[in-house]
Each structure stands twice: as C-alpha cells, then as structure tokens.
Length: 160
Image 1 (tube, rainbow, N blue to C red):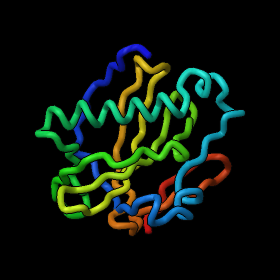
Image 2: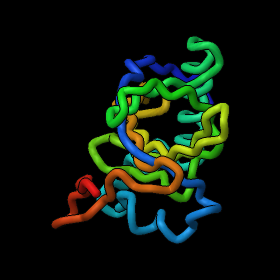
Image 3: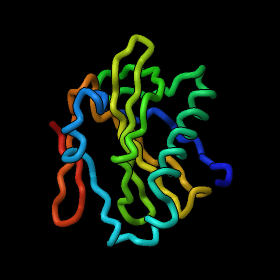
Image 4: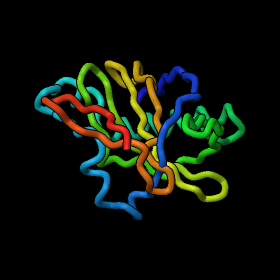
C-alpha cells in the first residue's frame, strides 16, 4: 500500500460518549450507518474495510505524534479537550456511504481509562486521496449522545 497521504484537519470537532465493543456487543449493529455495497460497487473495490482501518489507525497515530502522543478531541458538550489513545477500530463497523465517503467507529481511552467511542468520517476516491472530514463523539462510557436512523436509504444522526 502506498504511503497514506493524510491532511491533518482541525481536531476540534466534538460529540459523544463511548463504550467498548466488548462491553456492549449488541449495540453497534443498529446504531451506525450500514454499507450498501450494491449501490456503490466502485468505492467498495477501491477502498476496502482492511485498508480503511489502517488509514484511520495511521491518521490517529500521525495526529497524536504532533500533539504530545495523544489524539486530541474537543468535547462539544463540555468544552473539555480530551486526550485519547486509540484502543480499537471496529472493522465490522466500517462502511462506504457513497460519494467516496466512508464511516468508521473506533474506541479510545483517556489516560485514566475513561472510554469514548468516536465516529470518524473520511472522504477520497482512493487511499492516497483519503482525508478525515468529521469526527464525532458517539459515546462516553457506553452512553450514547446520538444514534443513527435510516430513512429512504439515507442515514441520519438522531440526538438521544
């Protein structure tokens, strides 16, 4: 795989509360957008789940290296800057949303062990073009701030 070129965007995005997949294994299937590969066959071939997971891991690693070893995210609910370490990218929660846009769910921990589930969106026509466009806090210690609902084939965030 070519060296992934990622433009580091402002990490002062915010949003939700987390729980580890091991703690809440039944929550993830219904709460995140699902891929529709038949609707977007070219994107599914260009960027697959494995290399999308690697792209997210590399983005987080590169960003943390610039910020004292932590992935920094501003919590829009509290205004607090969260210092996070990546714990797990949920490969089963990676999806193509069409229009060269991809979704991933990843678990993070603070230095004190508090867990956050972040929803990460990336856009690009191939791996070299892939960029993070949005990061939202979905959960803090397993408590959702929003959920996902589908309406007529379009996924929307719904506040809790």
